[in-house]
Length: 593
Ligand SMILES: Cc1cc2nc3c(=O)[nH]c(=O)nc-3n(C[C@H](O)[C@H](O)[C@H](O)COP(=O)(O)OP(=O)(O)OC[C@H]3O[C@@H](n4cnc5c(N)ncnc54)[C@H](O)[C@@H]3O)c2cc1C
Image 1: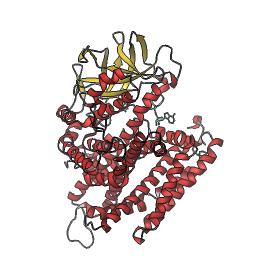
Image 2: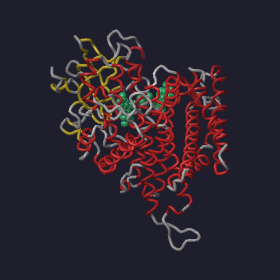
Image 3: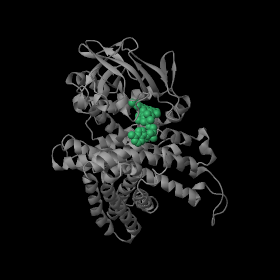
Image 4: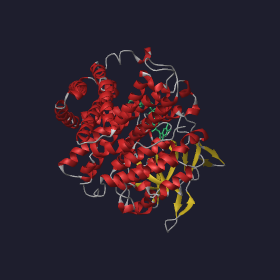
C-alpha cells in the first residue's frame, strides 16, 4: 500500500504565492512566520505525518475503536503517535504564547492539519476538536478557567471535545435539553449527548468537554443555551487530575467510515450531576458555540483538502502500476495511466485537490489578517472576507472531496471496491465531512442568508471587484492563457449575474434561498477557485520567466489550464440552475411525494 508523502512543494507554493505569507509576517505577532521558518515547520510535520501517522491509517480502519470493560479501545500505535504529536508541540502551533503556544499564523496550522488528515483522519480528529475547544475557551472563558485548563490543552496533555448534538437536536440546536443547575460556584449537568468525537479515550490524561446545556430560567430556543466546561476528571487544589466526574461513555456509534475514531454516546449526571463551569455569560452559549464552530468549519474544509490529496496519491500510484489494455503507437500492454480516460480522472483529482488547497489556505490567511488587524479598514475587510469564505471553504471543499475520493475508487476499477487496496477507505471516511459541523445545506443557507443578504452583497461585491481587477491581469497575459481567460470571464459573469438576481428576487419568494443555496455556494466555489488557479498559473509563469527550470511550475500552468477548461465551466450550468429559481423545486405538494 503506498504511504502518504506530504505535497510540500504545492503547500509552500500556495502559502507563498496565494495566501501571501509575507503579508502575514508583517502583522504584529507573526514576525517569525518567514517563508524559511514555515518551510522548516512543514518539513518537520511531514516526517510525523509520513512516517508515523500514515502507516497506522489502514490498519486503524481495520481494527476500529470499541468498548471493552467500560474503556474505549483504539488501534495499536495510536496512543504512541499521539504522544509524539503532543511531545513535539504540534497542538500549540498556532495557539497563543500566553498559554505556551507558538503563535504561528492559522495559515501554517492549516497546512499542518492537512497533513494530519491526509495521513490519518481518524487520529487527526482528536487534536482538531481540542483546537476548537481551545479557541472557544480563549475567546469566552473566565481568566481562572483559562489559567487552569488552557496550557494543558495547548500541550495536548489534555484533549477537548464539542458536545452539542442530542438525539432531537442536530442542525437545530434550539432543541437542546441537557440541563445545568447552579450549585455553589459551579453547575450540575445532566443529559445525554450523541455523536461525540473522541468523547472517551485514554490517550490524554484528561478530557475537557465543552457542553451546551440550559439553565433552569433559560428562555426557549437558541437564546436559552449556555456553554459549560465539564472535565472528565475533576482537579485537586493544585490543579492535578483527581476524582472521576459524573459522566460516562454509554456506547460507540457503528459507522460507515473513520472507524478508528471513537464517536461516543455520552451520559452526564447519572449520579446526580456532572460538575461543570459556565463559559461566557449565561444564555450566551450561541456566541461561544459559533467561535468553536467557525474554527471547526475551516478545519473540516481542510479535511476535504487532506482527503483529496491522499486519494489522488493512492490512485496515481495504482495507475502507474496496473497493466491493462494497449494504446495506438505503443507495443504490448500498457499501464492504465497511458489511457486518456484514466488521465482525465487523474487530472480531475489533481486539479481539484490543488484548488481545494488554494481556497482553504486563502481563507486561513484572511482569518489571520482579520485577527491581527483589529479595528482598521484592512482588518474589517479581512473579517468580511473570512465570514464570506468560511461556509464556502467548508461546503465546497468537502463536496469536492466526495468527487475526488469517488474518482480514486474508479481509477482502481474492481480493486477500488475491495477494501485491501485502501482506496475505499478514503471514500468512506470522506462521507462524513459534508455532514458534521453543519451539513452542506446548512453552510449554503449561511452563505445566502447571513453572508450575502444581511450585508446586501457588500462582501461578495468586494470579492467580485477583486476578481474583476485580476481578470484584467489575466487578459494581459499572452495566448498561452487564452482558454483560461475565456472560461474565467464567463464564470465571473455567471457569479455576478446570479448574485444580483438573487438580491433582487429574494424578498418576493420565501422559498428562494433554500432552493438555490447549495447550487449558488458551489458556483461561488468554482469561480473563486478558478480565480486562484489562474492566479497560480500567472505566479508559476513569473517564476519560470525568472529562470526556473523546475517542472513543478510548468505542471502548475497545465493543471490550472485543465481546471479552467474542464471544471470552471460548471459555473455556467449552475448559473442556469440558480436562475430557474424555486418554482419546479417546490411544485409537488408534500402529500403527493
Ligand atoms: C461521525 C460523526 C461525528 C460527529 N461529531 C460530533 C461532535 O463531536 N460533537 C457534536 O456535537 N456533534 C457531532 N456530530 C453531529 C453532527 O454535527 C450532526 O450529525 C450534524 O450537525 C447534522 O445533524 P443531524 O444528524 O441531526 O441531521 P439533521 O439536522 O436531522 O439533518 C437531516 C437533513 O435535513 C437537513 N436540514 C436540517 N435542518 C435544515 C434546515 N433548517 N434547512 C435546510 N435543511 C435542513 C440537513 O441538511 C440534512 O440533509 C457528529 C456526527 C457524526 C455522524
